[in-house]
Amino acid sequence: MTSALKAKTLSVAIIGAGIGAEHLQAYLQLPESFRVQVVCDLDDRKASEISSPHGIAVSANLLDVMADPSIDLIDICLPPHLHFEVAVQALKAGKHVICEKPLVSSVSEADDLLRVLAQSGKQLFPVFQYRYGPATMQLQALIDNELAGRPFAASIETHWNRGADYYSVPWRGTYASEQGGAVLCHAIHNHDLLCRFFGPVKRVSAMTATRVNPIETEDCASISFEMLNGALASSSITLGAANDTTRLRFCFENLTVESGTTPYAPAIDNWVFTAREKESQPDIDRVVSAVKCEHFGYAGFFDAIAEALSGHTANIVSATEGRQSIELVSAVYQAAKEQRTVTLPLDTNSDFYHSLHPFSGEQS
Ligand SMILES: NC(=O)c1ccc[n+]([C@@H]2O[C@H](COP(=O)([O-])OP(=O)(O)OC[C@H]3O[C@@H](n4cnc5c(N)ncnc54)[C@H](O)[C@@H]3O)[C@@H](O)[C@H]2O)c1
Image (cartoon, rainbow, N blue to C red; front, top):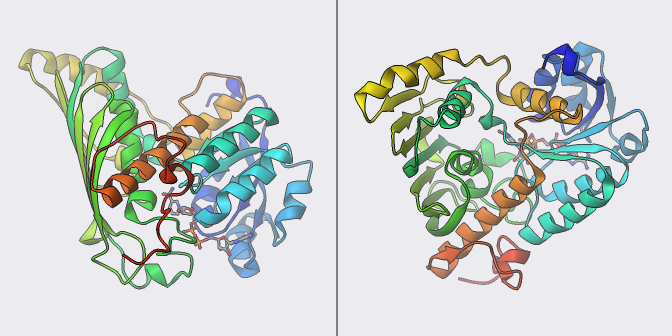
């Protein structure tokens, strides 16, 4: 963001020092917009490890942090089952909120959160940092220049490798605390990119399985989507690949888009944009090469938030999009459980509106 756009430097509290460490590195790239005032974690050592090299305070008491009037923004990097409660607390304490994925644990929680948000006068930004990078900016520029055309079909691979080490963290792998498996916690980013470029989902069918690790939640899935505009997409997910690969392919009427394979920041790769009609290729290449990207990943995401909070139009992730991401996961779990196609929006009377895993306590 240019300094002309900057209204004020926001004072940030990072809550949770796991992925919070990466958030901190991104804030440090944006000193005009953000100053991290405190890192809060129950584990003092973990908080100090990331904060002390930068002279940042630590706290083990979330309530003290919430009560501090000098903090503008609470950045929630806690295990998923704590997101809803802490986001509500923060909004009621008069703070803006950034919340790691998955935003909350059910669509009904998302709706409750949106109601609190509406009364708070503050803003809530669900984390989808994969959206930020040169490749996604290039694709957006091609769409804006009407060089893509209608979306036809897409394929998405989230083929990552997670083993015993990863699941040694107690909150992972259970319905009670992680809330879901690879659909909710890993492929959610890539499904967000699908919706970003192909629009909202109309209906889904899905199969899920737990085949890689001895956990409660799914670690493999195969999903088919029909988008509201009629385009089709498929998503293949496993946590049992030999390495970590994210691969996206979007076929539009006039353009086919292929990502690289960088797993956690696909938008920093060189994507290949191929015209269907050879004579359009120079126009495509011209638009792609004109794109300039200053910040990507978390830094790009935070930079867009700083712009939005300064009252400028910005490419942010809206709270409603955070809700949509949870509704889509719920629909996938319902489709898999009931072995049928599920149409969105979810019925508010549905068990899957109130819980991602309404029958998880039952014997199968
Ligand atoms: N966007 C991404 O790419 C990405 C990547 C990794 C993790 N995440 C998400 O970030 C969140 C955190 O994941 P993680 O891998 O950092 O987990 P983690 O277990 O490594 O870190 C969570 C931290 O929260 C602390 N904590 C727990 N309860 C607390 C409380 N009441 N007050 C203060 N601190 C408390 C723990 O001590 C721990 O250090 C999850 O929702 C996860 O899905 C997102």
